Length: 136
Image (spheres, rainbow, N blue to C red):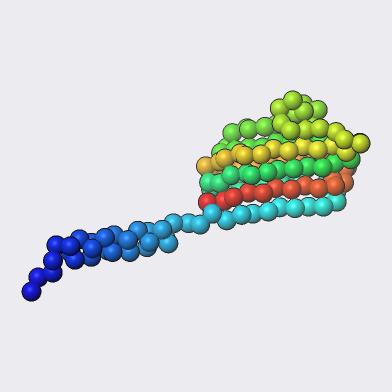
């Protein structure tokens, strides 16, 4: 006896569902990478982030006792942001409060790579250097 058309259709739906689930299992899962440095003394430059492959920088933050630092963000091999704190005040979220300098960069998507370099002319001990990335 042959199965009914309804049974055959239901069987095809179940097969399609199994194939879809297997395909989803094979997809790479995004992973979060957190970089957090407290009281980090820099005397020249520091590669804060060197990420390969696609992803997103959710947040990059610097808290410093002086504004004599620079950042360089290279996305997919091209320059995304470069400048001293003073240069970047009107380009990214940067502000001073009670003698402490804050700089934040958010939501930077990249396909191939992301590099963030923090540089100083004279030694600075940063209160905090933080990066939150999602790598896919």
